[in-house]
Image (cartoon, rainbow, N blue to C red; front, side):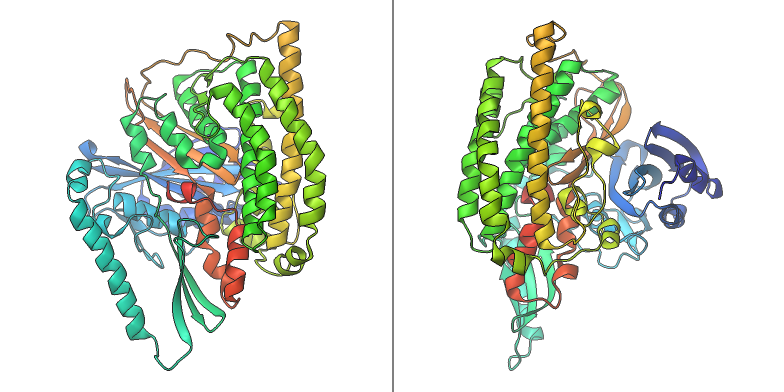
Length: 551
């Protein structure tokens, strides 16, 4: 059902606000004078149709004694969004606000992360345990402005002992709680399981039946949101792209958009199309890995090898452009990093030809595989309503029938000029999530052909100068400001919340919202009552990347 932005504005007529303003065509921005109203606001926004919390982003201002909280609410059906601000004291004893998780389940892990990194306590949260950080960071809140990284890093031996003690105590608790004569046990699925990657699922089971799953994440935490503050605005790219190398181009685009907004810079039409072209190559690369991993979880490893063969052709294009196949650093504020050598388009043609010649056979042999259809088509089912309430995004959301794609809902780069549509399924099963990747691969190739044609025609007509139009100048120092940008990353929505101070040379704060957070925190809901053999298949279908999960 279509609803207007005016409805979002009217929500705030019943609350004490400092301001309510239009931020972007699909965004309303408001600041509450009282943090005590945040739960009531969340309820009112949910009643208006904004049922999902994308993330919560604290900004610490130690010199001013305040912690600013930024909530990003979304209506995934009517494409309306609301950015809500409020402030609380930063002193640990008073750094507290009511949890909105009882209102919006999608907030659960985002509030846990804000607690772990900034020390914000969310009262009435159902499970406010540390998230991502290991035991040696408990109670230290590493993203606070006054955290001493050097002092912490100087005590590595004690930190390792603390982590080991924590694990041993956990095992002792399990041994004490479990009936030695019963069939109930606790298994560790990962962090070195071939299907899991660096994540541990603490699985409580009774025989083969799964009783509960508690995901433990953070094994590849790199504190990226702190690392970017130690770089200048261009140098921060090397941290941003490490969100996940399977699709590093689109995360860099999202960050660059936020910088450009604060700088008041508009990139060239040529650079917009280059971002589309490079971004879709990166999406194809990620989807090829995603499909291969999905079949790996079923023990069918040939799919990965076939996909890697095709993927290499697309990585050849990235290498031709940037000199690197994975860590490309190809996007930066102001446009794209390098001019375009037109022979790159010939490299792209070879990749497209390889794809067209191969994808039909891959789908015929694997997508119609009876093991996949029988098993994956019966497990991991997520309804449309659940996908919205749990804050899914990307292919995982669209597999449950929700038409949401930021390239269409909030177009960026040159996507407003691209011919494309929503790729959805209705079943919401593990098989549907796999099938969506096939459909999106074909769509990405269709977009790539459009971008290639537009760039070639623009250069031939003299509209584009491939040696000069790739970049416009962005000031090295930015004014004080704040921006939110969103991109349709391969695995879902990536939201960047960037904060700068006056004459800043580097970000003051950068929040990177990762889709894998929401896709991981529901594993317990999806797998309770299922069997141990269902875990890898459902996990693989959620298209989780430990890089963006941990950051």
